[in-house]
Image 1 (cartoon, rainbow, N blue to C red):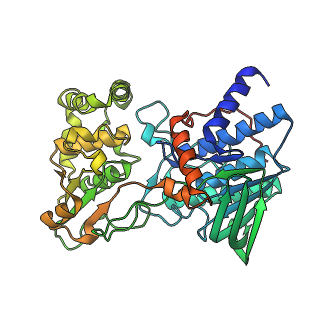
Image 2 (image 1 turned 45 degrees about the vertical axis):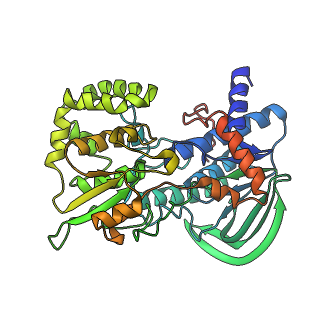
Image 3 (image 1 turned 180 degrees about the vertical axis):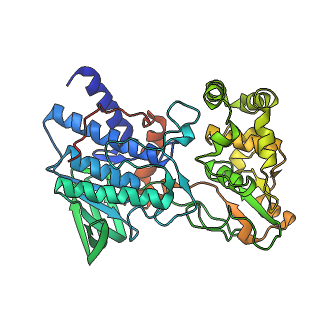
Amino acid sequence: MDDDRLKRATSIKDSYELFDGIFLLGSLQSGVTVYNQQVRAHNLIWALRRLADESGIEPSSVAVVGGGIGGLTATACLHSMFPEADVTLFEKQWELCPLQLGSDNRWVHPRIYEWPEPGSRSPSSGLPLLNWSEGRASDVARQVISRFSNLVSAFQASPELYLGTRHLKVEHSNRVVEWLGTSTELRNGFLNYLSASGSKRKFDVIVLATGFGVERTSPVSEAGSYWQNERLAQPSFDGRRTNYLVSGYGDGALVDLARLRISRFRQDTIVYELFPDQLDVDEVELCELKSKIAADPKVAFDTLSGAFDGPFARVVEKVRQRLRSDTSVVMHLSGSPKQRKTSISDVFSGNASFLNKVLFLALYRAGGFTPCFDNLEEAVRDYGIEPRCVLVRHGTDPVDVLKRTFHDTKAVHDAVCKMRTNKVQSEERCWAPGSFRTS
């Protein structure tokens, strides 16, 4: 192995390692897309393979905690890179990819949140393992599970599956997993549940693909979580206007704002519809705007506002022409006391994608929503919003998910603080073409 590859593999390993031999997949990172999690999974297992080649020591047993798309990708990569290792996969729900499976309202695209970067509109993830194409979240989950099933059959090695884990704890000092769950077989892409059992086992490597959890809830809202099916994008059947309140300023909140206010909104087509005449030319200028905003988030609002007053003024008019008449939205933009927002411009210092910030500002300029910075409970009361129409998108708490996975919560807290100050887990592909065995 040449020095550059060894250094790169070591750097990747260090950025994932929460404890000795225990690796955390993406939960503390800012890029939280399905595609980014899959890239991170490929990067991690590639790095472990390269380091094993260097040391001559391979893991004989690996646990993957989490049966979402990230966990399945890590498991597939392990079977590809370490064909002799025993892999055990744990999932607390009764299905694989439980968040996306059955979610018909959410559209998932591999790289649309990277827009307007080159390649961001490509409909395929183009990954070596568990590749998929854009579609409804439920369709993407079916693609991933089907490809996972086909892959393990091709490898003639299936992971040991435990679903419905009612109890799972990790001892960080010795890499022991204690669990109570149902042994499950994957047959022709479907699950066959066998028997429940409790056990305890030491593993050479543990990959935590626990994900980000579900959103924080609020007693003032009766709406479901982000991935649950609802009718927000459907026109009203009774001809009445429905008043909504959306609380938050991340991608989840801004997507729901767009769905509620832009007629026939779809994430996969909106950029073509707003920039139809010279999209490729516009994207060069938009990339420059995105770079300026990334360099100094404080100038984001003024930079985009200037663009909407100049070359992209037509975008605001197109959004205005497509405003739905059957909805109105109060956009509650006040965060926690430590992160309280007081103006529209403050929102642009957040971590939402450039695309959603463009849509947010276009809607604001088009008069598409009423901004609100009051206390959430007061805002719901003052605007008379029904609980079923209050959408709270305050993000998730991945640290809480991690703490509940370990026996020693203090050690987790200290390790999380350290990881957050270390190098960010790369969202770029670090493996060389042809690195992964696919059959």
